[in-house]
Image (cartoon, rainbow, N blue to C red; front, top):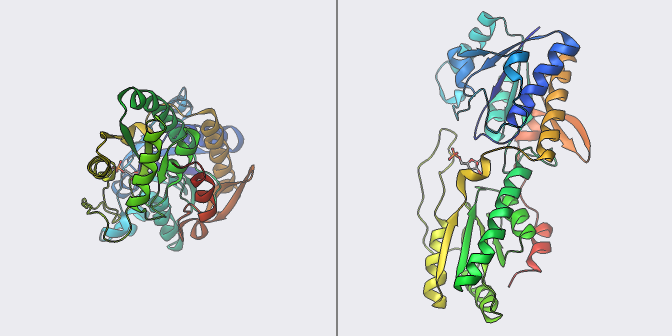
Length: 341
Ligand code: F6P
């Protein structure tokens, strides 16, 4: 059996750990051969491959990024894209594919499976917003990076008696903001699922200043105010139709400064959250998911995504994983709200 492997969408720490586990178990337990496809769906679309054997995966467990490269190529938007992928797979003698990605990459995997491509998905995203898995690898690393940054910002904010607004990633789901904000004792946490009231945010900031403690506001990039409260700018779209965000932190800083008369600055953590070495949790999760994905290929259990439920790795239909996003439930936000102000 020849198995192709690709990584699509935004990269995240732990991708290399998955690739290593897939290849190591696939060769040792099943005697498979592997082909690496470069840059997400662009690889099978253009037949762009790289060797993927034991020597290619040696030493990559702790390395961030992905040795295969990644892209946001949406082959469903390319005329004849599916046929080109099928022809290339046949020409390269690839019998099955392992697609490691988030909602977009796995959404394409699901559509390919409906068109007779043998594919198994592995959930990846720092956003933790894929359904049917309790956690995605990369999330724990991103939360730890953000928590450490917020810890550092606390001390400088206090020295200068200023409010600091920390913008973290999360277009549609506020998991990183919620977890890093709770872990680092944020004054307010703002997430996309819950439009915020700027008057309440300002009240929290003022009450924190009264106690001589400088406020830290953690805001997800996709958070937005209640209708009509503040104007926001919109950015360009990528090939999956997502708007490129960034800017809510700066807007909030301006608004808070003008309403409170206190200095407010914004810090955008950006791609720092996706870079560098994965935490132990993410390395273990990624390794287990990779090993289970190649086991699913060996069982001919295609059209599935492997995921974490409780402490078990399970297989679910790709459809169940990609139909709806896993957003932050109201109760989880309310747990954090107790500590605002
Ligand atoms: O999907 C992961 C993610 O990091 C999001 O949190 C973020 O909105 C997006 O990718 C940024 O994408 P890009 O790196 O393409 O700007």
